[in-house]
Image (cartoon, rainbow, N blue to C red; front, side, top):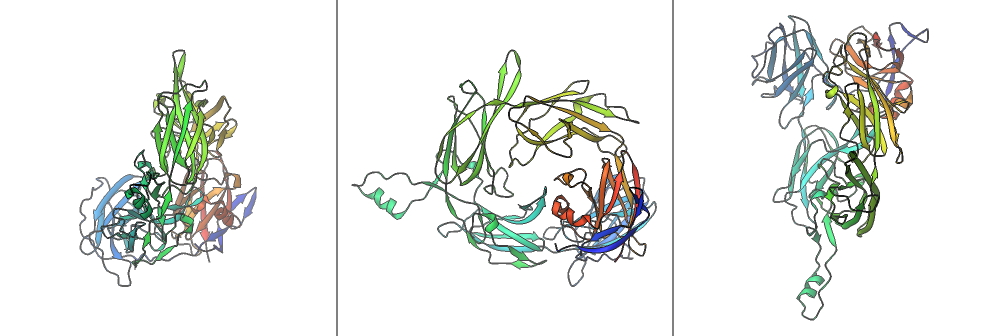
Length: 606
C-alpha cells in the first residue's frame, strides 16, 4: 500500500472543547472496482431460504472480472445480515443471475465464491477488503453487479537433498499480513501436495507477492528412534570392512522447512509475484538438511521429589514454526518416574521449555504449579536441564453489573473469564477458567507469570440494547485496554470486572462533496491517546459504510477518539501504530461520553 494522499474534507458542525472545527479526512488511493447496476430481470434462485415476513428483493448478476465481461455460472452467492439475523445462500444460473426474495428491511452483505476463482464481497475495493452493505427498504428491489476475479497459479517442483522428488511434501503460498500489530507471514490456507514427480500446483491465489515454502513433516512427530541419519559412502565402506571397528552412529538430521529458492529462514526467501489470473511456473527448490538434537532434563517439586502426571512442552519462540502447520514448533511429553523428560529430533532454533503440574492435598484444593526456561538449540544435544516447579499466582475478583434498564443475570455459571497471554510464542500459559460463586466473586488459580489481558463473556453479551463489558480493572488499570503483568513472586492479583447497559455508539452517514453517499471509503475510529494503540484494542474499530453511506460504531468505551476515512487500507493496518500516526493530522477528533448515542454526518471531497 502506498503512502496516503491527504485530501480536504468538510463535516457538519463539530464541537471539540467548546469550539467548532473544520475536519480534514485522510484518503488513500484506491484500486478501482466498478459495480454497475443491471436492469434485466433475474431468474428464480435455488437453495434459498426465504424470509416469510419480508417484501424486499436483492437481485443481481455475477460476471468475470476480465477484459471480456462474461456471466459466471454456478457461483455461490451468500447473503448475510446481523440486523435482522439472516443467512441465505444461492447458486447463480447459467446466465450468472441470482435473486434473494422475501427480505425484510435492513442492511445486507453479499459475497460470492467459486472453486478456482477468488472469493469477494460486493463493493470491496480489493481482495480481502470489507464489502459494502446493501440497504433495503420494505418492498424495495435492489440490483447489483459483482465482478468475480480469477485466481492466479504458482507451480513448480520440490526435491529432497539427493535430488529426488519430495513426494507428499506440503507446499504453501504465504504472504505478509498485519496480524495483531505485527507484520507476519501467514499461510492464507493456500497449499498443495507434491505428487510422485515432486510437482505441486497452488491455485486460487490473489494478485500480489508470495513466499513459497515446503514443510516435509511437522516437528512434533519426532520420537526416540525415529530420527533420520545421513550415511556417506565412507560410512558404507567402513560398515562392510571386516577389520574396521563399528563406526559411530551418524549425527541425526532432518529435512528442514525450506523456502524458495532454498533457504530455511523465511525472511531470506525470494518473493514470487503474480498478477490476477496469471500462472507462474518453474518455482522449483530443494529441501535443506539441518542437524537435529536431543533435549533432556529433569522436573521436580520444590522439595526435590518427582511430580506425577506433569506435562512438559517445548515451544518454538522464533521462525522455527512453519506458518499454516498446526502445532509445528510445539511438542509435548510426560515425565518418567524419576522426573526425567526427553525431546528428540529438535531442529536448530530458540525454544521455551515449559512444565505444568497439579499438586493435590487433603488439606487444600489442588494447586497449579509451573516451571520454564529458555534454551538455544544449535545442532548439539542439550542436557542437564533442571526445572523446579513453583506455584502459580491466584487472580481473585468481583463481577459487577452497572445497569439502568437491565436486570443482572440470575445464574452466573455462564459467565466466562479469560486471560489472554500477550506475546507468548504460541504457548497456552493461561489457566483454563475461573470459579464464580452466586455473589459474583471469582477465583482463577495457577496463573503463570507473564503479561495478560483479561476479558469476560456470557451468552447475549454485546447484542444491541443488551449488556456490554465496560472494564476489567486489575491492580488499578483496565486490562481491557492495557495488558497487566503477573510477577513471578506475586501471591495474588485483584480484579473488578464490570458489565454495563450504557456503552457508547457513533452513527451517521458519509457523503462526498456533492452530497451523495461515499460508500467506497472505510472509516477507522481510534483513541486519541497513542498509549491505547494496542493490538486487539476494543477502542480501535474499522467499518465500511453501506451503499447509502450509513455507518455505525457500537459498544464504545467513553473517551477521546480520532475518526478517519480511507479509500483503501490493508486488513489489520489499523493495528499498526505507525499507520495510525499517519492519520492523526488529517482526522476528525471527537469525544464519546459514557452511554452516548452520537450521530455524526461527515463529508469527504477532493
